[in-house]
Amino acid sequence: MSTVTSEVLAIRTGDDVVRVRQGVRTAASKAGLSLVDQTKIITAASELARNTLDYGGGGTARIELVQEPMRRGVRIIFEDQGPGIPDVEQALSDGFTTGRGLGLGLGGSKRLCNEFRIETEAGKGTRVTIARWR
Amino acid sequence: MDRIPILKLGHSLLVTIQVDMHDRLAMALEEDLTQKIVSSGAKGVLIDISALEIVDSFIGRTLANIAGVSRMLDADTVVVGMRPAVAITLVELGLSLPGVRTALNAERGMALISRRVAEADRDGAADAPDVHGDE
Ligand SMILES: Nc1ncnc2c1ncn2[C@@H]1O[C@H](COP(=O)(O)OP(=O)(O)OP(=O)(O)O)[C@@H](O)[C@H]1O
Ligand SMILES: [Mg+2]
Image 1 (cartoon, helix red, strand yellow):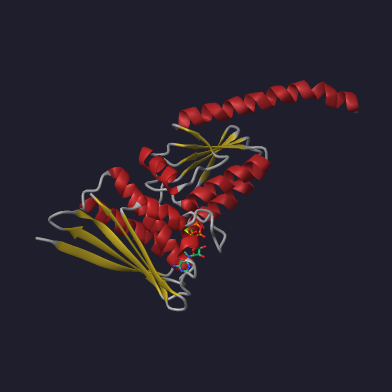
Image 2: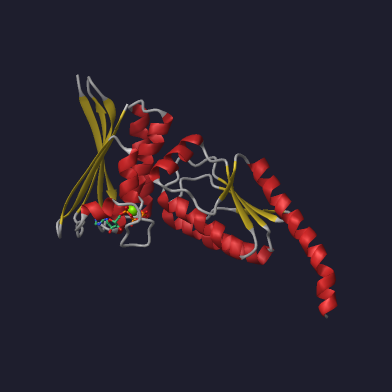
């Protein structure tokens, strides 16, 4: 039997970024992730939620608790209707930023997750999907 | 807006972060600490993050900024109580917290600051005759 329980959170303010962290924490502990893995996925989610807010002009986070026969874990899908990322390769490289950040969010999140996917289109928006499995 | 309390103890300022900080709260802490260092003449700032379940790039950057600003204002910042899972995650994220001094717990952090204050006092005493000589 496989189930996916999901919840969609809006990302419009800094408080929403904190709410995303809390939602991911709840799902990650229900999925039975180790403390270190929970910390990694929450941290990655915090980075991506902030990107959604700062660069995507706000959007949503869909937090999925995945319980399949072969795997348990958490998947999170961040979506915005912002400007998109013109050069994904460049955006992923450590140190690249168009803001005032350190340019660590995207590359760092990728390292912290088991699955990482960016879909983006200029003028349409960005969708980043991450997952961490037990 | 809520703010994180800053306590003064001897030559030091103590901050215990007990809430999951949103970005504005982190920025407010940086401002408040900067002012308090100046108004109190503190030589050390001890920031206890043992209650923090995560440190992301924003919080990490805030800690690094606080350390940098306090150094310019002649105070040392020591971050104490980082959880092991947070340390592992920060390294993988690629955030090395340059310039941020860390200690395992508050006791060791205070010891670092006291040593610094003692050194400053001693240097100050050694400098004193020169200062007089110039006058
Ligand atoms: N959702 C998004 N929409 C549009 N551009 C984005 C989005 N997410 C990231 N980017 C672009 O990718 C760059 C790199 O993002 P990354 O998160 O790695 O670094 P940062 O946010 O600039 O700094 P840091 O995360 O270290 O504070 C950003 O500066 C921005 O130009
Ligand atoms: Mg970022």
